Amino acid sequence: MIPPGWPSCAALATGEARVGELVEEVGLAQSTVSKHLACLKECGLVDSEPVGRASVFRLSQPALIDLLAAAETVLQAGGQAVALCPAYGIDSCTEVGLEGNNPGE
Image 1: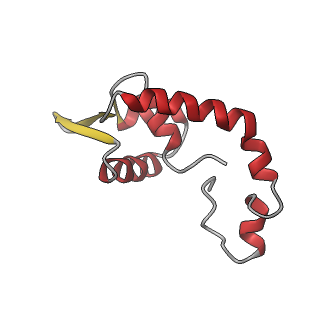
Image 2: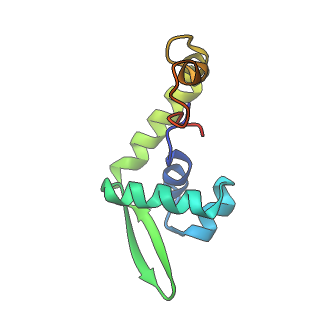
Image 3: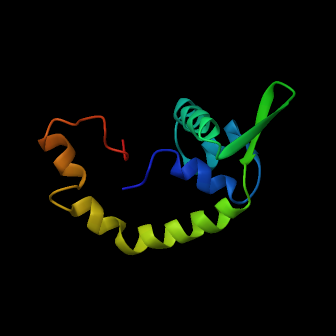
C-alpha cells in the first residue's frame, strides 16, 4: 500500500520539478499529481515557486530525502504483507464499506 502523494514526493527527492515533469515521471494523471502536491504543500512537506505560468515544486526540508529512502526500504520489505493482511489490507477496506479510502486508489 503506497500512501497518496508518495510517488510525487519521492520524485522530488531527486530535485525540483514542474507538475508536467512529475506527471511524466510517476505516470499519474495531472489532476492527481496536482492534488497530491497541494496536500503535500499544505502539510509543509513541499514548497513551490512560480516560474512563468507554471510552478516549480521542491521538498521543503532536506531531511525528507533520508526519510523517503528509509520508507521506500520498509515498503519494499513489508508493503506486500500489509496489502495482503486480512484485517488491514486492501480487500478489508471494501469488505467493511470503506471504498474510496484505499490509499492505492
